[in-house]
Image (tube, rainbow, N blue to C red; front, side, top):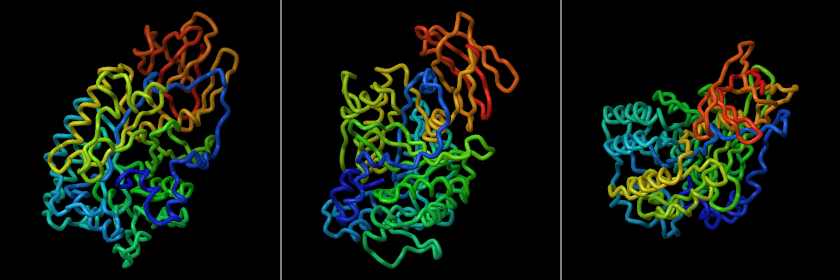
Length: 459
């Protein structure tokens, strides 16, 4: 992720990069969607279980290394004139301890919070997570990785945030390039002009390190402006690298966030082969907030009211939830820890408490779960044949939820393959679970686990 704010990226750096990186403009949506199936316009795919997905994106996290401490002098070397990189990084702790990871992860598990947690593979060039981390024992590194695997993985997607998050790495040598300019920083110019094949090589290098330490991965996160001028190539590279290294069925990535009126619905891209044995797509997940927790380096206290006010009436999360789009917050791990003061973590706890006080229909989801649902939502063929609704799904997904016209008083029936299944009626949308349905005026709302391939609803 960009350090400062993503909007700052537009105002700083080389003019060519800034001019081309207006990734907050509507043209960020001008990606390559690929194929789309036929769809009956009387049938609507709703959010899973009729709820609103929410999540938390954590950037700049890794094992042990405090990226705020180690990134600051490297950024200052690339941008010696930038005052915001002249902070007293020597006074920042070099480590974000596993005790804090455990405290954070256990609290999130208790309150159902899910999302994405970066693991930078070669954090700020300090050391390789699949080899050694100078300054820490090999045992300490192994224990830190084990903690991520056991505590975080169940509720969090793991992403590489490129390789180092600072200097670009020559993938042939495993060393940073000799140049010390913004053009050789992952956050700034390194990705500019790169082809999909070149970006695939770079992303694959990062992914293999995480695979070497037995961390699962279905997507990637871009640091700063990485990929902002190469969006189609970045999407293709994510698709190719995740499928090659991890055999990921539905790769996804986090590159953009919007804090204005634009849609933050995921973008399903490069869809192909929908009727064949090997369907493909990649999903861009879009954040809906800035880092209003503690900043990228743990020196800028945020404000809970920007997310949701004390009276629960206003705030960015309220705006996005009310329009039914996935409301995915964005933060940075050093800001959550806040150099030991835990300011960002305190704000997160307040935000979650307020969200749960106002809403009953939120559904915390990992980014991979959101990506899978949106891929099924956009790429499943849905056609009417008399009173029957026939579906052909390239991807399976749990809790697929449809609103469709009712043809009578009989309860709907679902047929998977040639096996009819009875589903139970519930009294309201809030009670929907897979294998249930409810009435919504003249329509029916049906929730079931969508299988890959054909299925049918008789309603």
